[in-house]
Length: 144
Image: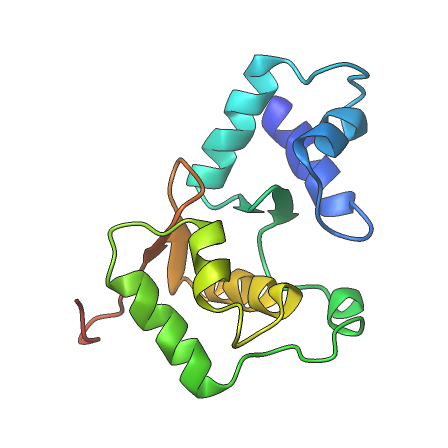
């Protein structure tokens, strides 16, 4: 039941993206969200049912058209996208903040966030139980 409630709250957020506090509010908790719900949300992140980028929790699946319309650029160039995948592939895990620091001169944070969500949706990246990124390779693709 908790998983369904969390999923509904995250999927119905408009605009998409909730902090822990906003998720707690959406679930009807005025004070701090109970630890059971937070543990369930972390489990959902590890199982790719929801995404956590930095302090914000997003629904899994494609980025909504309404979000894309608010962005000046909706995709990174192929070169930067490849560099992003290579960078993540060179490490066991990479935090969202490290990715943002590494690519701060190549893309604005919102475009980078959308691209990361797209790569998660394409299953080229995944989030671990700590919401750090890991590279996922298709058969025959070069690995580091």
